[in-house]
Image (tube, rainbow, N blue to C red):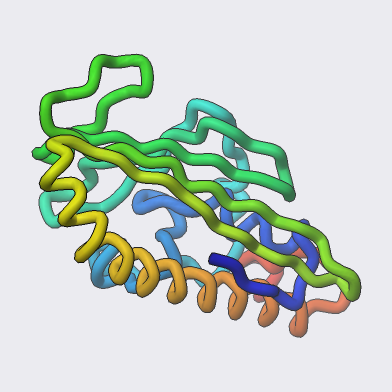
Length: 181
């Protein structure tokens, strides 16, 4: 899936690196993926440092349980995430043996600079799981419409925030809560 954003990658990137339940949220349907908390409307300087092996927490009805591990990071260009969890939603590491029943996936965000200070944000991913029959049913009936709905909303909200900030500030710097005052 992809979207074109009317802002350069340096202005879209800060929105991506601050994602996470215990950070800025996921910019999708907040009642579904952020525990009802509104995703951030501002760039938060305290959430701009992200490194390989950091974890971005995911909300569940039981509280933060799952997480995406940062496995690849090229500032202002690419963010790669890995997540794996068992049937109870407990995460496992890439290097551990997989549980008998599990789901795991990769989620990548690629920013490509376009002429006119625009960005093409392409998101791709891969998921697998076991048992295979259960996963095949979920992968066919549940995952595609759910992912399309959530990803489309995330695209719209990231684009809206980055484009809004670009229109409101004259000097090409992302707007933080402090600079908005």
